[in-house]
Image (cartoon, rainbow, N blue to C red; front, side, top):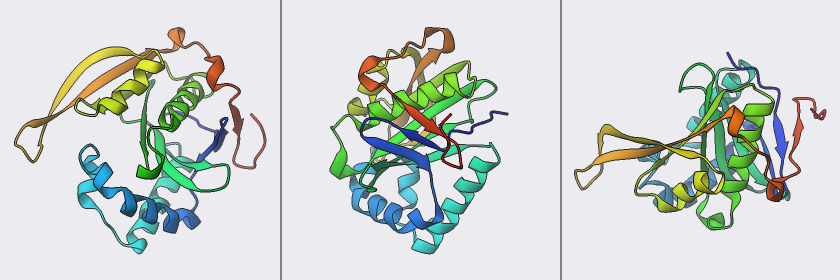
Length: 203
């Protein structure tokens, strides 16, 4: 099991932190306003929109998983406090492996935020959680998302084809991108990264 004390991560432009229940309204508004942008590539978007009560229950689950070291979902906030996206270090790929996932609200795409987030979480995975490998996966049709692991020097690891089909009848495919701990090198353009525990103390 991974241990993660990185409850808040500060980058040049963002705070990436464990969600609070009080984020439910902002998260619902962000998802609802971005639904057309999310639907083509995010399978969970098929279940949207959900009610504020359902969103609150979902957040409670995410927060509980974070504190139990079972999965680590973060909100991505501008330093003004505005929620612009969601991300995570996911444990679903097996022992010693973490997967970085991300999405950005439609009003803040194409500004480099997903790359900034993915670098920060990759650094946390290797330097604070002792992951041996980090994965990023993207829908093969999502060319914007595919640029992110390439910019961060992840290496291609093949393509997986899913049972689920798109609306046109073709099967969904995801490209897999890998980075191993020994290959991670800090990138000056994204530094410094500051990390804080649940009490706000620097790590």
